Length: 138
Image (cartoon, one colour):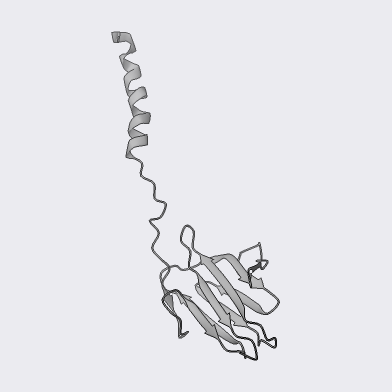
């Protein structure tokens, strides 16, 4: 390289250094930790009585979070697009206030089992809850 073009060398090396030194942080989010009296297995499956119930979950390590998805029997339930904190289905509702999520499941008057799936998120981390409710003759 000619002496007059040496000033370009740092301009050529800088983008390479930036590219090599930057690490992706995807997947480095701490898992959401929950405080609740709700009985569930390690996969966060909750058995709901035929009479329904109210379930409260407090996220201990994120001061706020929002809903990514809510499904009643695999049917997508509309989430309030303003703050992504409320979802009201045919037989369930989910509400988030700061770091507390309240899930209400109505009584099941049918003979069919039903499943509510709730997916809260705090950015690039997701948590999954499944509420399994038996029908009245099960």
